[in-house]
Amino acid sequence: MRTSKGKETRLRYGVHHVVENRHHLIVGVRTLPAAGVDEREAAIDLLAHLPGEHRKTVGGDKGYDTHGFVAGCRAMNITPHVTMNDGRRGGSALDARTVRHAGYAVSQRKRKMIEATFGWVKQYGGLRRPMVRGLDRMSAAVTFAATAFNLLRMRNLQARAAG
Image (cartoon, rainbow, N blue to C red):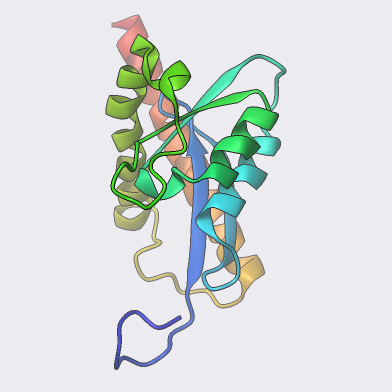
């Protein structure tokens, strides 16, 4: 993957994960070659593997406001709470049936918390400059860092509930 014009190509991986809003725990993680899969396709794949038949919601930034992603979510009984991208040609893929609810506004505030997860696995989970090569090893390192994050998060949640 090339980071910018005129720079050399480097080996990179795309890390995709799903975080639940209530307790801020990572519920799904996937590592893929950076140039191979679109973020929206990886998100649809991760969402398809979530357990439970109940209605779910998913938050995302403007990049996820496409007709394909919104239709894919709705086909899986998932309500897409993505940021509306009114500036693009054709307008937003979301309509009033999604954005009129109070839950949409809550999701817009909560979706920013996923960046804290990425920051933690880079700062403390050893993924800023991983010392592994190959997709299998990188995937194992990402899964290990996500598991460590969840364990620490659960410890903090228990301490808060007990105190």
